[in-house]
Structure formats: C-alpha cells, structure tokens
Amino acid sequence: MTSATIDQGPNPTDEFVKGLWKQNPVFVQVLGMCPVLAVTNTGLNALAMGLATLFVLLMSSTVVSLIRNLVPKQVRIVTYILVIATFVTVVDYLIQAISVDLHKALGAFISLIVVNCLILGRAEAFASKNTPALAALDALGMGLGFTLGLLCLGSVREVVGMGSLFGVSLFGAHYQQWVVMILPPGGFFTLAAWLLIFNHRKQKQAAAAVAAEEAA
Amino acid sequence: MTATTQTPPAAKASALAMYRTLVGVGLVCGLLIVVVFQGTAPIIRQNRIEARSRAVLQVLPGAVVSRAFAWTGSGFEPAAADAAGVELVFAGFDAAGSLVGVALEAQGMGYQDVVKVLYGYDPRSQTVVGLAVLDSRETPGLGDRAETDPAYVANFKALDVSLNDARDALAHEIEVVKPGTKTAAWQIDTISGATITSSAIANMIAAGAAEDVVRVAAHLDAFTAPPAPEGSSR
Image 1 (cartoon, rainbow over the protein chains, first blue to last red):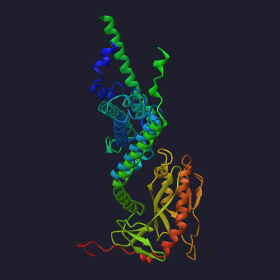
Image 2 (spheres, each protein chain N blue to C red; image 1 turned 60 degrees about the horizontal axis):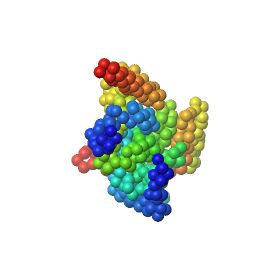
Image 3 (tube, rainbow over the protein chains, first blue to last red; image 1 turned 90 degrees about the vertical axis):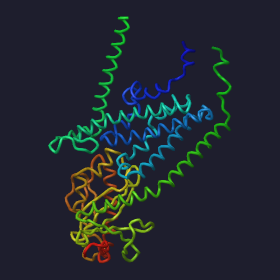
Image 4 (cartoon, rainbow over the protein chains, first blue to last red; image 1 turned 180 degrees about the horizontal axis):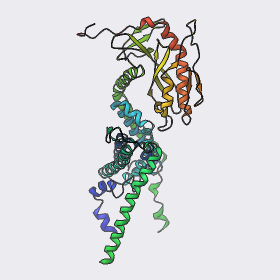
C-alpha cells in the first residue's frame, strides 16, 4: 500500500486543484485570516490583494523548492522568510509603479504578506519537499484558491455594504447601504456565512459517503 | 527503531554551510531588490507627480489648471512640476486664469510612518479650503479614517489662517483640540480612535501654515497663470 503510493508519486493536476477547493486556504485551512478580514471590503481590493499574494506565493515556493537541497535544516525558516520578504518588497514596488491609488488602498497589508502564514506554510510543508514544478503548481492552486476566497468575501461585502460591485453601482441611488459590512465586523459576518455554507456542504457530502458505504 | 536511525549524521550542518547559505541567499535577494527598485523608481516617481497634480485641483475647489512654483529663498519662481531638490508650491487657477489658491505640502510622523499631505490655501478668504493625503501607511480602518471621516475632513473646508496686522504671522495659531470641542475657526478637531494620525496631520498643517501661508501671502503677485496653450483664445 505505502510502496504503491510512493511509486505513483504526486499527481500534478491534484496538486493544482486541491488548493482551489478541497484544501482551500481560506475556507478549509483557515489560513492568512489577517488579509482575509481586513482588505476584503471591496471586490477590487480583494482581487489585488489575492493576486499580490499569489505572486509572492508562486515565486517564493518555486525558489524555496529550487534551493531545498542547499539549505541546512537549522536555518531553513530564516532563509524562507528572507526569500518571501524579498518578493514582498518586489511586489510593493511593482504595485506602486502600477497605481499609487491601489497602493494607498492596500496600504500596510502589502508588507504584511511577509507574515501571511499561508506562504510560509506552503514553503515548509510542500515546497521544501517537492520539485520546483510541483511546488509551483501547488502555489498556483493555493494562490488562486486564496484569491477566490478573498473575492467571495470582497464581492459580498461590496454588494451589500456599498450597493456596487467593482465600483459599478448595482441597485441605484435608493439603495440603503449596510455600512457595517464594509467595516471590520462585516468581514467576520461574511466569513462566518461562507464557512457555514462550506461546512454544511462538507457534512452533507460526508454523510452521503457514509450512506453509500453502508449500502454497498 | 534504533538510536542510530533516529539521528542521522547529516542533520548536523557545519557552521560554514549555514553561513554560506544565509550570506548567499541574502546577497541574491538584495541584488534582486536593487534591480527592481532601479527599474521601477522612475515610473513610481512619475505616478506620484501625477497623483500630486490631481490632488492640487482637489484641494483647491474651482481650480482647473495648476502651475508649480519653487521657493528661491526670497521669492517664488515658476518651476517644472517634477523639479527635485526644491520646495515646491502649486498655484491653482480657474478657467478665466485668475488665482484660486495655493496648494502647500506638509509632512510629519504619523503612527506608522511619515504622512505627507497637501492642503489648499485660499488667499481671498484667508482659509485652508481642502486637504488631501498624498502618502500614508496608517492602520487601515483606524488611522486612515483621517482621510475618510467626514467630520474630520470638514475641519479643512474653512480653517481660519488669517494673518495678523503686521502680516508676519498668523493672527491665531492653529490649535489642535479634542474631538467635539472645536469652538473657533482656527481649531482642528481630532478623531477619537485615530487620535495619533489625526493629531499628527493637524499638527503638521499648523506648523506648515505658520511658515508657508505667511510666505505665500507675502508673495501673491508671483503666482501668475500659466501661458494659455497654443490655439486657444486669450
């Protein structure tokens, strides 16, 4: 049994897809909650933060995987942080070059990508043990899953809180905005609602699996 | 499981290997940052200048065109909007070409880092008529309320900065007061919950206005409208 799985090796498609759904960083692993709650008050902020995190995750996972055999075990964490911090600085400059307004909106949270536990978590748990190609796929999947999670929160909060989506007004001027949804408490409410939906689905699926097993 | 398999000798890396790894990775990372910084610096500079030009029109209601002036030590002279190494002020003009006001920069330490603001001075009413934050890394949701809180922003719609009779200082120094205790037109209300940032901005405007507003008011004649673009009638 164990030898069979080792021979088979990890399946590239699985490594990519798992981050999107089965091990979604936001809704299943519940990692990186600081940006999830803080910068998801509009769809655009959520998208930009997700893509910035995706870029850092992809680059740092690939690099960590490339140097995995050169880094002594004792100094691995500090090396990973160094790599991650470098790419965060790079992203910070790139975003400033793209748009000053976007940089102002994301503010302090760009620098805080350094301590997003999702990125260090993937470096330590996956990239440091797998080939660069697999690590990149894993990072891409996790990053897209994270972006998707942020978008789920950001779009709901913007629609309910401001009556618009990506700055486009949806309900006209008469819409009574739920201001609380774009303030910090709204982040908790929305996250709770999404987690409820995800866990409800998961329980139903588990129950169905048990029922199918019993029937067989 | 025996003791020999639990502690493989390879787990003990030499100090040299650790040193080599850290220095090597640090060097490569440093180089990468320098390359990206050099590559993006001109674009970022251009973006900031454009953002500042937009902010000038925003803090001077009614202005449609702006022109930069540099302080020479004794007076103001027209300068390029991207001139470096000089103190710039930005005069705003309405469609008829008459002076609406002058936008002044101020900066000071906020809660996280230096905060840079631009405020508009209207010489006719002798008031500050607008405020825009140019650069801030304050805590989202707390410190950045200094940009969004309507009651706080209202402080800078008609802030009294009239000069004294000798025209060498403000008649009333700008005072920073606790939230909800503003009684005079030269006082600035702070925000409770964002006390440090809102007081910091108020203080930097108070300090900046005490010097710059006096200087601008003494040299109002220097602020001439930019030459009309070719093809348009005078």
